Image (cartoon, rainbow, N blue to C red; front, side, top):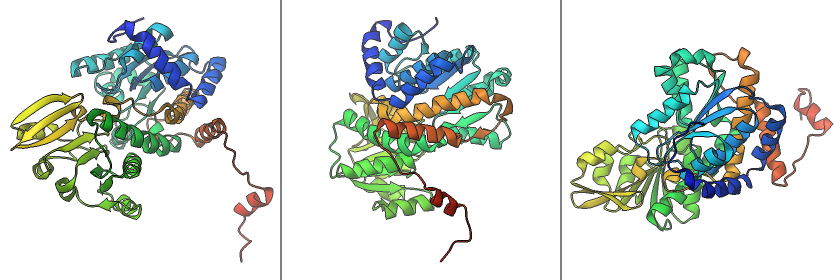
Length: 418
């Protein structure tokens, strides 16, 4: 078995983390049992480019139980948990190519290993793997039955490919599933982003002006939690409807050029480029902390910040770099990469239980329906969403009402009014 990890001797600690996370993933555990019986991926090679965490490890175990010949690589250079990677190799026999803090060359070497595995199914978290397929592995595209995409950023890239008429394979936008974005993005990102910030800085959130760029599900989640911890939350947006929603939710809404003057902590969660840039850095007060919880490290214009700085003090705390600009200090967290995975442990297992269950079932759907899928981006089928939601509610001990026969009839009738 081929692999490239930091140290196989870290496996015992990783196994404990994987087992601990597994205790809080009841839906995925049930799907793993189902997969073990019916083997939907028997004889199929699968490559997954995901954050290598304890929660992802339980997804990997589920896919292997379903018969997949799986190779896992990292979707971000700072998100790998090295002990988990070691345990996946040693204890579960899964090929892993991921090392926390790996350089760009190593990162792309690992992506190439995932494509050289000659997968028939792929999973992506940011679309780096599929982007590589479309540049250097086009000949292999017809062999791939389908790909799952886990992030907002990745879905944006793939829809752009589809719109340009250049998408070479069917993709299921797992990120757009309600059982993913309404929970993973809102509750998972919201909590884990603040967790990463606090671990990196030991900052008291109460009383701070916290500027959140973007009021999508991730921004909503962080805003909710920051307010709950006593922050004065400011939202910046480019979407009129989301800006209005933020205002109605009780948050201040203003342009970044105004927020930059008063913010103590800035976090970007947009999926776009250069949200914080030169004109904002110029007016920030000394001591301002900037970080990103969007997928790629482009939301903060780090080259511009570097150019402006007269001095850069690296690693003044773990995951904190100080940029000195005309006597004031701006602190950049986690090199502008995902703060929740770089400085913390990513989303809690309980919420990833739904995301990865949806991911696993969507993969099974892609295999079963591969002959009918075109080269386009698909939504997750509703029956998968309903199954995951039902199983999650059951695991939480929650029951809900059912429509009566009279109510069902009323909802499809037209002749009953006032």
